[in-house]
Length: 630
Image (cartoon, rainbow, N blue to C red):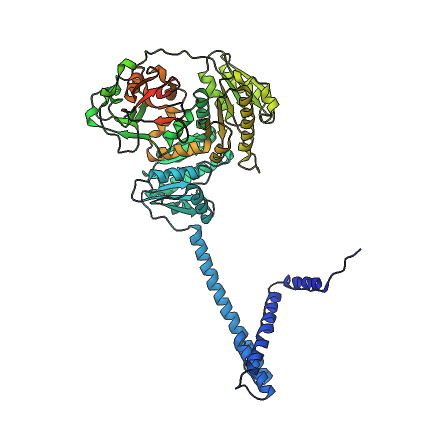
């Protein structure tokens, strides 16, 4: 049955219908509304005026004059033609003035919008330029601000194809206060040389080209590097640091960047770090401390007093800095043989608080040789690794394990059959057979019944990988599944009473606090690691070779080894003694990790570059952080 419509509803519908007819109807309603208010008010004013005309016609003329003056309709009285002509002239004047005001308002609005979008050229000198917008931008900008903390003036210019105000609000929310460092955002495509010139890259101290969140967008990085070369020309310019995700585009990106550029492959670096952390739990904490500017970092230093002395002597030549390598002929070498002599052109690679804190101060007198442990080299043992989940970095992780595996090692993969097949898993490890055995089991890693059948206690390490993002998927979806898997592993830990050695890959650092894992567990935030690396290299391009060696399969790497291998347990001695004991083994000791109740947030027991004179009682659970050959 049809429902009756009230008079009020009909009136509202008629009013809405007339408004839908466009601007003329809106102007008509506006004029009618003004007349409804102005005419009665004018009548009241005239009728209450003691000086108003006495006749009715005179008062009506006065009402019309007052109404016309209020609405700017002339207000002339007399014959009808005179009144109409007066109204016509008033309407023409009104249209002219309204149009002029509209044009001025539009021009000012466009100009303010252009300024708000950031279309003016940056006039800073010695600033840092960040091109692109991805998950790394907040880490990169935060670290650049930290690097400029001791500078009187600093600036970071960000150019991305986003709204300027949106970028500024996001950076302000995520980065926080920037101190004396100015943050300048410019809106435009970094692949356009004309827009790229807005950041004044020729006067910058460094340029960082961020990888895209979408792995298929690596060609955009190459195009940005080409645009940058077009803007800078072939002359010498600032160092350029870029990152791509896919190895297929690294060569093209390197060619586009030219001699001034350094290109990182983010997926390969993340895979190497995951594999290293699985083999040496706690290593991610060490890298986090070394890569950010909040603690101690890699620097280059030189002291003429060390010329002619051996590299081994320099390990105890700095009380508050840790010597780890040499820069010779522009090429860095980590942990060279102790008998290597220091030449006039050599520079030392040290870990220290700042670039001016590496001061020569002999501390060999702090060494107590009586508590050193005799060296007993350990033999490599077969490893059993369980990988839960699969993504594009998984084959690279298998490769890292396979190259270092000894005979009898096993990698078991559990993943959804939509992510990987048994043939793909076998192919990933085929180059390392027969010393490495690959097994595959299809299943949902978020279900307890799947993991309970795996004999998890038998594995030396467990790697949890999130799925690759798919179009239309939220960025947190991969981490959400990882968190569910970690909850199931935590349940199995409670049932078995044994803490599982888990290495977790995540995309958002904020999800780390939600993960049901111990505070000192290894969590690899791939975007953050790459952002930290890019920032460190942008401040000193020689560090690119240093980190390349640290993350490589050959050469010197960071290890965590039992403190009992260097000093006697339960003995109190200085860190200089640990450094001397490591020197006898051809290693560079750079810190330690304690395992006691004091090993809590925020450092989780990790101490990098302690004072050589620091004395402590070393337990058999403590670990020493060293740089050595694997």
